[in-house]
Length: 231
Picture 1 (tube, rainbow, N blue to C red):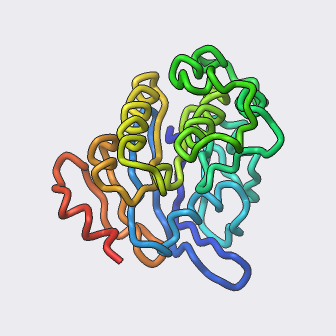
Picture 2 (cartoon, helix red, strand yellow):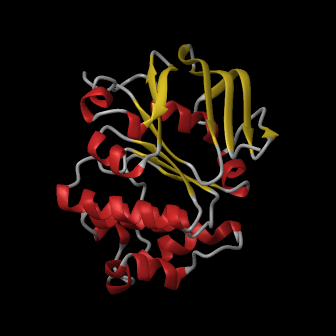
């Protein structure tokens, strides 16, 4: 049983038809990269699951259960956590308070506050600092930590390295692999193909709202992957 599957899914924002008969499947423990040029619908995959984009056709399943009218809490309750583009750190809450928000689903698992602090020591140091006062890289660590506090079976990361310095990207690559080593599946929506090659074992390339190519990352070169994201 797949953790997440889109079968011939069509999705819209109002009259704007974005996803066209999209097929996508994520299995337990997989590390999958969703790649493609800007504007091809990658973020809409996340937004359809969260109910931000309207599901207009096809079948969306989480853990084998069909979601006919997806809502944000459906994904969280069924073991999917999202690290959104832009991080969405809650203003006026401390680092620790932001992390505790992720535990609202009360799913059992290996991730708890001390485990997050071991993974991200800087968050322990700044636990009582307002989350929005952190640097961009630290905010991304906070967003990832908050998602892990839900003990998800799958984490969806939407452009997690956008705007970050290469040294922070290197740190995140190591963190993603550490998370995967715990058995958590990853769906990485990313433009940095070097990161994709370090983290993902499978890729799905999108164009015009649907998957047009897929394969094993190890069987593709960096140049071949880049052709799917060149603007």
